Length: 158
Image (cartoon, rainbow, N blue to C red):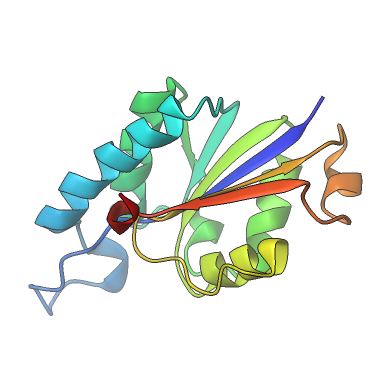
């Protein structure tokens, strides 16, 4: 068995209403264009998810809904993923206890975790999708090792 993790930074958000709390900012037009495209590209890559975890922030939850639809997996919202550091994001995926997890959340945690796992991904742009694979069947073992493979895809990458 292999363990797989997909990190998805939420799609581009709308900053047009300064009265909105950060948690309540929606996607902008580009975000609504990019999220379904990136979700379909992940599904078309053969990635199969057992669980999708999302921050409760509107922009992340909306992004996650597109991934849930494309992958055929319900989204589990977790308030603690909002603004979470890299270590918490990885722990949340591991604690889910399934082989393949998608996490939809925010920077700086997403870019930090992508860097820690790849040693090359310095920044996760909005709606970027980074996948990581370990040839292990135990998250505790996997997360102590470097992934055997990783990919990065961005809306501007094609």
